[in-house]
Image (cartoon, rainbow, N blue to C red; front, side, top):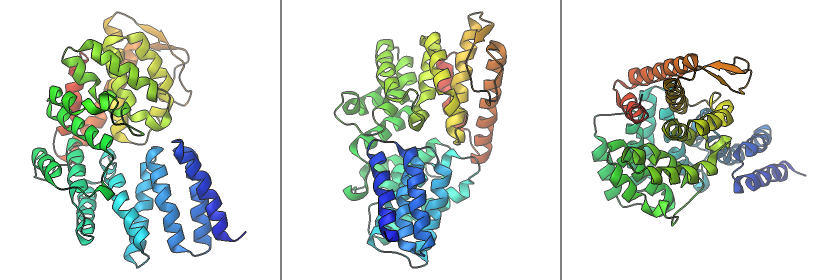
Length: 365
């Protein structure tokens, strides 16, 4: 068997796992394929493998590796290793990378803005619509990456720029992004209206409707639509509970349960804690810490002093079987404030902390 056939064998096995969204199982297979290409000095083949690997990294919550791999591929392309397939992949994967860069405190905003500019120029060089660029700018603003242009202006540019269907998100993801925009703007009724074709099951994808249900939980509860919030919680949680590759939506469910069903909140916390405390995204960790703070704060308000939990021994809060509620509340509050303050300092604004505090206020915190 020649090296190209060996590569295909690993790649096709990885695709089988991708088809059932088992991205963490794709990673070692694609890493082996890329290494075989590297050993045989086949740069283009190595790039093809790594483009698949970037997607696997992203959807298995290993975005740091995805970024390193992506920038290596761009560097190779700029050195002349390119063809139509490479151009196509770079167009797509700029979106994956810029959808994640703002979640990491270690990545300076200058680097994020430089990457945005490179994406914009690359799209223009290839005569592509800037619709994805504006869409990502809207999302980045919600994470505190402000560049002097308002989020309203970027949103209007996004929805009025003619899309290029070859490089657009699926319909479900596009609608979901509109929902999150209106949630961020505080227009919860419009968020519900925008999301109707997701909520009625007309449009779905690998991450939608689970992310939509989660994002709408606190907004819908704050509108007094308690039965609808419970419906979204039940439908959404069963899609993600215990799934390490969909953990980013779990904090919203814990927040909701902190004010609706504390016993269930403890159950969801325990089931997902081992994955979330190891999570590499500072943004996801911050939201998880905030959700846990809300949960244990509300337990404390009920006068409960001790609780039995089964947590990993290597976790920072491990304390055998018995846990002090006030100590847990303080730990998660301190961790939340540490990350909020770090994002505010990095961004030079209070966009992240103000949005998070809006959710905590609904939770009674």
